[in-house]
Each structure stands twice: as structure tokens, then as C-alpha cells.
Length: 497
Length: 134
Image (cartoon, rainbow over all chains, first blue to last red; front, side, top):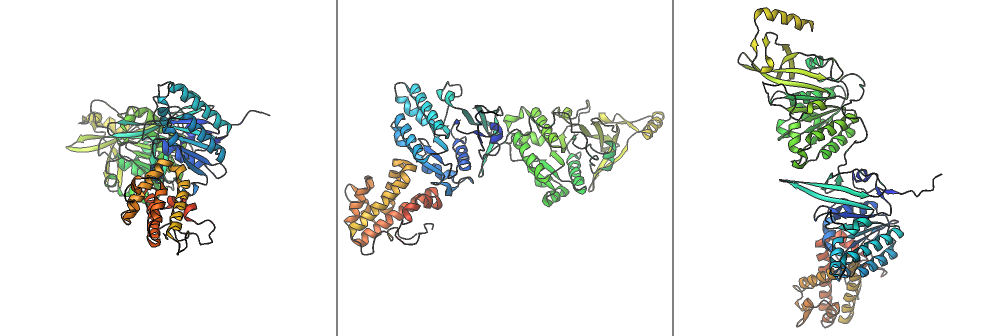
């Protein structure tokens, strides 16, 4: 039997934060929430406080300088987590501005001790800490004094069995601030601004004794409070590029001819890329794919990244979304992060127990991402595909691809290697008409057709037609009619296929 | 809301009793709010309240040195005590009501009621609990 101390982990009540923290907040830890003004530190502190505080385990919230308490209460009560009934019962606000303004750290500490002795809180918040740093700057040796203060506070709070948070207005990361050494946990919140988009990010720079998820994680603040988008499924699920073993019958795409070309439909759990020029019918194919799923009693999710979703989306899809058989993840302007999209997709997939996911289109998706994430778009896509594969769903992604008649390309992002199957659509000119052809380029670990088939689109959707065996040079966009003697041979070969 | 002084003083109370009651209520407000907003925060609220209430009862602002510049509630008490019973009651009620409304405009009526419930709910007078929400 082990006699090691067991560190309880507190659930912070902030969606996604516990995952990033590596399983919650260690009890009796001494934490620092730091970051520039306006990045959500006080909101984060309040959200955790209202989630964690109970009459048996009350919270004390010390306001030092910085934001006047009346203003803080005025704005924080706008959030859903702000529970007025908890005030003076499980949550107590205490203002220490007078002692802090006089620069008397000892006095501040004494007042904290008095309040802690009186109320025996399980949680203590000191907001904000920079004021204390500033107040002490007038002293002869401010750093020393400050370290002493923090050290004493940390020791005291741990002995009083209180989980403590210092909220710091601003710290320079590279600064060898003594506070950083004393703290058990260091939570950094910041805003990243690039061009016109702003993205909020949180980083756990330190959390003693816990495997935190490294790096910057995006979060969003809404009326419900903070939501952190932890990278979903990383470290679990399927390794990249290995689709789940095929289970059950293949998925039908809803286009009979295409199923035939795919070798009998799309293997379950596969991701398929539909690449083609503008207007070639990618979105229609994607909608048909979802509609076919619904017809077979399955549900689906579509992530739509179009400029005018209502205008562009087709009627069938709108009905499915309204009917609740297809979940819709809509893009919200140009400040999305990949983790947010993944998180939205996953929650829809799990809510509907969906088996089919459509991302329409990768081009729009890239534009919807905040500019700061665009450099990593390929890595992001890989993550997205990996996570969805781990979830066991089949994914259809569309990708806008300008026709190039000098080379054969499948995706502008090099996304081709990410997916298990590729369908390419293309325009060709025959007899002064613009015709469309489609080909299945790849279906991993499966036989598939190598035909280049003409197809048409009408109000009933896509219709796969025949090959054009009397033409050659289709991929060049301007096919020429073959000579008679070659033609008969080509038709024979097609019949054998 | 009901007149704040209604539960605290008898209808035939003299100005001194009324002034004492207003000061007693203010002391309770002070006890309830100073820990939260800090002494300076409360002083700012006090001054604003006197300023607003003086629009109705100019004498509240005092004559020479005036309550407006003085933040000692004892001055308010003496100003009240110098008026007639009716005036003192009207002025005292206006002051307390204005304060309540001011705080409610900043942090909302329900949080105000929550923070000041020990003040506005008379402890053991036997009267029914007052509904402080408008």
C-alpha cells in the first residue's frame, strides 16, 4: 500500500481548461494568472471561483488595486457563471486597496491573514498583483520585499489549505520575476493580433506535478464565460494516416456511378478529398453524400465555410439541417482556430452520433481561420483528419482547384496525402461545349476504377455518364478526336474494364 | 421600494431620532459595503448620493461647508437634526433611496439587494421582510 500524498485535482469549471491543465487544478496549489490588460484574467478567475466555491469550501476574492470592485461586479455579473446567490455565502469580496495604496505590503498581508483566519476559505484570489508590485517599487529594495511577500503568502495559504491565485496585470515573460519561482502554477493568457483578427490564447507555462498540454491554446469568451479549445484527441485515437479497420458495408455516396468507380462505395472511416474547379459540382456531391447517409438512417455534420451560406447551400441540405439529421457548423468570420473548429465538429458529431462529416470547402476553411493560424494550415488539416479518423467518422472534404492543363494536381495544400481517397473533377472542351469529367485517383487499400468519366448535373444531382473513348488528351483540357483505327481498340479496352 | 425609514422610526419621531436612524442605517451600509468596495469606493458613492438627493432637498447639501464636500456622515446627521420632523424624514428617505438606486444602477438591483439585505431587511422588528426589488 502506498503512503504517498494524493493530490486532489479540482475541476475548474472552465470547458477545456482541465484537459489543458492535465486533469484539473492541484488542490492547495499557489497559482499565478498573468497577462496583459483585457485578456480575460479576471473573467477566468471569477469563472473558476463560482464553479469551485461552496458554502463548505468558500472563496475569498481580494481586490487590491486595478479594477474598482464596483466595476468588476458590474461587468462580471453579465456572465452566466456569475451566481449572485453565492455572494456572501460561498464567495466573499474583500477590498484591500487602502493598505496597498499606502505601499504597505505587511499591512496587506496582515489583512489577508485576518480574513483567511476568519473565513477559512478553500480558495483565495488576489486581484491584481501588479498593483502590489508597483506599490512596493517605492521601497528601497522592491524585489526583495516582493519576494518576501509572495513567499509568505504562498506558505501561509498552503498551510491554511487554500488553493490560491494571484492575478497579475502584466509580467514580462523573460523577466526573472521571483514570483515565477514561488508559484506552483503559471497560467498565461494573452491576445494575439494579426491584421484585423484577434485571437485569445492561454498557455500553462508551469504546473507542478502535472503533464499539462504544452503550447498555446485558443479560447473564446462569450456570455457563458471562457471556453478553452484543447487540442482534441491528440495522443489518443488513431495514428495519422491509418484509417480505422473497415467496419460494416461501404458508404454509398448517393451517386450510383461514382460508387461503382470507387469500387463499391467509400470504405467506412475513410476521408475523401473532392478536388475540382469552381462550379464543377463539389458542393452538390458533398450534399448528396450527406443526403444518402440520411436515407440510410445515418446522421451527418457539415462544416460550411462559404461566404453566403444561405444563398449557396442547396435546398436538400437546408432541409436536412432543419430536420436535425445533419448538424451544421458555421464559420464565424475570420478569427477561428483549428482547435475551435475541431471542437465544434466533434461536439456535433457526438451529439448526433454522426457517421458522415463534410467540410465544404478547405479553401473557405483556410479563409475562416485567423491569419495567425494560416501558416500552419497543413499541420492543422492533418490534425483535423486524424481526430475525425479517431472518432471513426467518414469525412468528405472539398477543395477548390483551378484547372491547370499542363500538370495534374489534386489539392492546393498538398492535402492529397492526408486523405484516403481522392476524387478529381475537371472541365474539358468537346465540340464547343464545356463538359465535366470525373476520376477516382486513389482509394487507399482498395481496387477502384481508373476511368475518366463524363458527368452532368441537373436538379436531381450528379449523373455519371460514359467515358469518352473517342477523345484523347482529356487532361489537357482540349481533347482531340482519335483516329478511326485507334478508336476501335480503345472501345474494346473500355468494355473489358 | 418602501420608504427605508418606515421600519426604523415611529411616525411621530422627532428630528434627532430620525437623524440617528439614518446614521444607524448608513453605518450598516458601511459595514456591508466597505469590505467589498473599499473605504474610498464608499466615499465616492456617498458623495454622489448626496449630490443627487440634494436636487430634491437642497438643504441636504448643507449651507456653508456642506455635506457635499464633507464626507463625514456625522455632518449629515446634524443637518437632518436641524430640520423639522417631516423634512428630516423626507430628506433621510430620499438619501437612502437615492443610494440604493445609485448602487443598483451600477451593479444591478438583485446584486444590490443581495449585498444590502442585512440593512434593508429589519433584523427582529417583527415586520415582514421588505421586497427591495422594484
